[in-house]
Length: 183
Image (cartoon, rainbow, N blue to C red):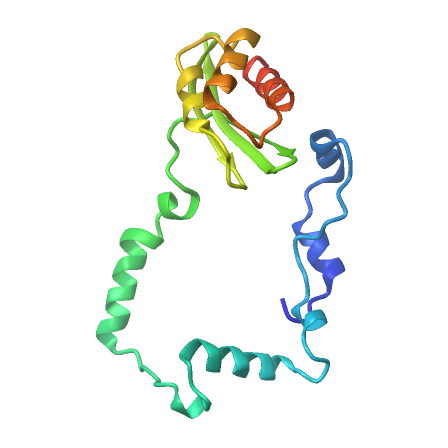
């Protein structure tokens, strides 16, 4: 954002505080939104920023040197067709639901780690990790080890060891998986 009212943005983007407190335990002060204006020369307006970005993107010295393309009726027909067939579908907008019933996430030192999962009749049926960070290790191996099994503490610990995860705390991940897979 260039010059956004951060209080309004924070209010619009923030989850319910009681839910957040249950999830995190400790309130975070980091904002997901910043104003670029704070990091630019004081004299740079939003129009100046736009002009600067366009010149950099198109590698020109003058905005008049940027080639303008005018959409034809055929272009619009192609766009409308793709909207109808692909981009306007629930699968495109919300993702394909592979059968997961639950989603939970937790903050780790390396970043946020979410899991989509289904436990049926005491066995892990579906499990997919969704890290917001680069994992040093093999989460796929953890998933494979747990799917089809009853998620006992011993099996969860073995699965995590099989994944050889170096940047996710073993105890924290064990407790996280044990709490939700056995809920």
